[in-house]
Every structure is written in structure tokens, then in C-alpha cells.
Length: 70
Image (tube, rainbow, N blue to C red; front, side, top):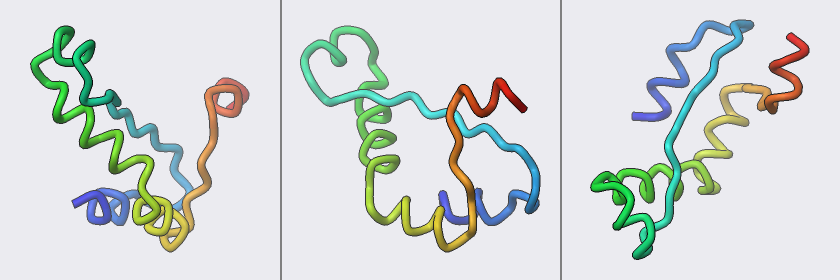
């Protein structure tokens, strides 16, 4: 699914992908009922597979400072 989303982005466009990350711990469970979705997002974003997809598709990851300059 993530691969398909990333493949649909036109080359050369500035795209912001927002995910809500969280751990599956007691604090997160107390804060939001969507703690498991946030944990799954965390696992995805920090996975070697996700980094491999980003590299294969030729994305350049930037941070907020870079985005502010643009």
C-alpha cells in the first residue's frame, strides 16, 4: 500500500507525508484509542523495508528546516 502511494507521486514534486507515530505502551493507550494504528505507523516508518522503498523510488527525504527554506 505504501509503495503504491509513493509510486503515484509525480517526480520533482514537493510532497509532505504525515503520520502519527506512537508506541504501544500504557501511556499511549490512555491518551488515544488509536494507539495501535500509531504503533503500526511507527513500525512502518522505522522499518528497513520502508527505507528501501524510498531509496528504490529515488525520494530525497528532507526535514522541517529544509522545508522552511523551500
